[in-house]
Image (cartoon, rainbow, N blue to C red; front, side, top):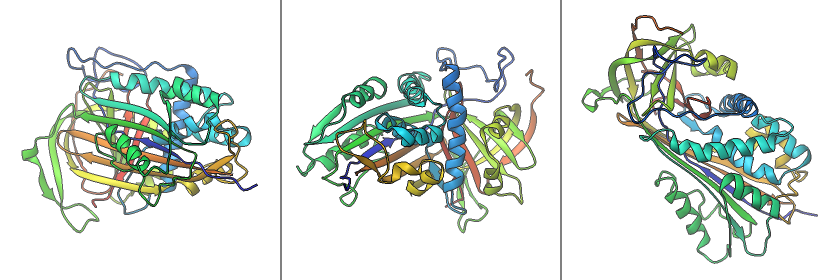
Length: 417
């Protein structure tokens, strides 16, 4: 029997917060050492279970695989792999059989991956907003259900317990639901994502829309002076870019492929790591072998006095994920053979999966947003700092992550456009 149609739009927004990779003499652990945090706003860590820590490792591999599969040479782009984790994590509570196994494997879960992912998402949802007083984080979830359809009780209970999402039943033919959905997204993302659906993509006959919104705005621990920002040439671009500048102590490392710089936000709970390819190398060269194991190399930085030049920029991405996610290991979910028996009272499969993302980076800090939409169709001691130059005047890769867990929130590339 031909399957009818249900949509799940999952919205995730994140700008970044604050982490520092500079070294501290009084703290030793197995990660990068941090500069002393401002008094009264000390960094707070998220404590993970061994299972959750393993999930982060595999989920970061998913992040690199996702970006490797989707990045277009010569085009600035930003994605939030964590947005997809939230979207699929919530939806996976309605899946079964091979469909659920494939989603677990893509996200890095084990045989009990559904529970592990739920617990991890809930921990980030409740604790991320409290890591830094100088960083604003909002995470929200909701479910809009079309009149006449019924979600399964277990799915509803799990959505409430782990994602703080309470279903709301509406008549999608009332001429107002599209505006209600977009207003909810705008309200929970500080207007960074004002529309997640338009008149063409909104379908009043679907079963349900699921939305997740995360807003995250972080201020640099060491801000750039706007008076120092000058227009400069950027390799590959036909126009100059506003290049910010400062000469300060930061976490820094390098190898034959690239220079790596860590810029902390606020109290150092979040950070941006920038990978600048060597002359003659490219972003594709960096992405080729970038795995979680390789990524660990860039988490061990020493202090250096860095002459930093970094563009002030904004970047947007709107990308379809159906084919990409199928190639990454979950093809069943996009066919009529998909198994989502625990989602609602109608058989469903994913008909649409896409993400819109946005980043704004300036002298004060960083703000980013991502919206993922899923449409369900029915059927050590530091040495004395050295002085180095880090002039990002050519295409570069950047990653925004949370310090204590290593979770990647955003990954992007900038080409000067």
